[in-house]
Image (tube, rainbow, N blue to C red):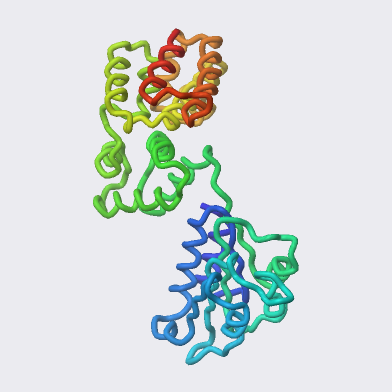
Length: 339
């Protein structure tokens, strides 16, 4: 979880408020969570009737926002003003957008907690407005999470939800659901609701409640391809050819690339303990043996060639220099990798 996000949540829970908060960035998961926190955790239910004001940038005038912030709270020590979709705010004749609120940020009311939500992009840090927010309050930017950090994020979210999620399962969820944190959290919470007492998020639970096939799933396909087991590979390939939606080409190529990249690294850590190899490859020790068992059939030049081919097919999978459908592309790619 984002450390700065945790810091803001903790300070709000402890009733330690800044007068102004600007939250922005591409990853809306944290912005939505913080906005919900400010709506529900600062004022009591009775106080909200008079002291919670929610405005929307596309509908509100800049002077409406200033008026709301400068108003005194009723029957409470504090009031909360939330400006959502702040990037759409129309400014005054003299100032554009958020800069029209500069006069308030320079002298904020001690009785107002003002949250400015600026989703999908960063606010311009060169403006006087953002500089003043940093001086007077809190500026939090929610960055898109990197793909290689996603499994760790899933594991931490699992702990907070009361689930033990080990690396193989977190990688399955990361590959299948993508870097949509809200979608990931919704799916994990859905499983938790259905099995409130289960300590561990297993593949069986993922298959049952999210829908990833247990017998023929895209995440076992790389091992089938490199394990020198033609019968299993043939069965899985036929299944994916008959059910293209079970193996979207961009996801399949990405999964294969991760697998072959690990095989590449495994060539340089052979002879070490499974735990050391697992740490070097960034995977669970349970699956290290599968990678190491494939190494005799996949010398380094063959692995390098597979990685080069996957680079080509990553483009073809999204329509670059390609006119074939997914079924044709899958057969062609697997055939060339196995040559």
